[in-house]
Image 1 (cartoon, rainbow, N blue to C red):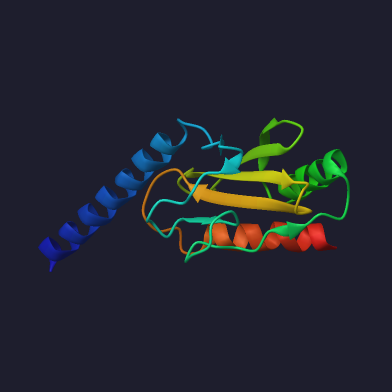
Image 2 (image 1 turned 120 degrees about the horizontal axis):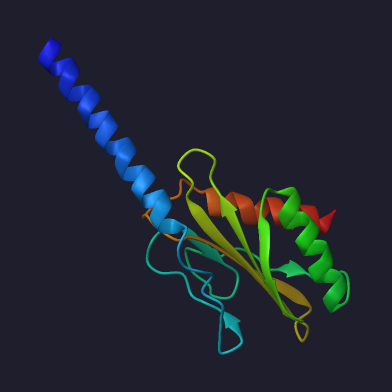
Length: 149
């Protein structure tokens, strides 16, 4: 019984160390940015959502209720209220990061204003790992709801 308990404790400790290493690794890097004036596609992992490309990672874009800068200012406030940190803005793009409280995983959140279609496209993705247990989808839904209010 003592051997089993020791093995279980060592296994849990190894998993925790692995997650702390992944969390540290996720602190390097940056948001994917715009590619051909669109948000980047999601890779084949379930830890990303994007409104630019239809498919399993799709989330609905947010209708614009204000002109460009007003919409980005409103978005910036919604991101910060959700716990994010805005790291870059231009006239039609915003990038922010969200850091998990336990292991320090960093996720990238991006938005692009599409004035022609009158919408704001959103993307949220984990920098490391495979699954995010739906955190990025929930984040986009929370920010979209805040923008709708």
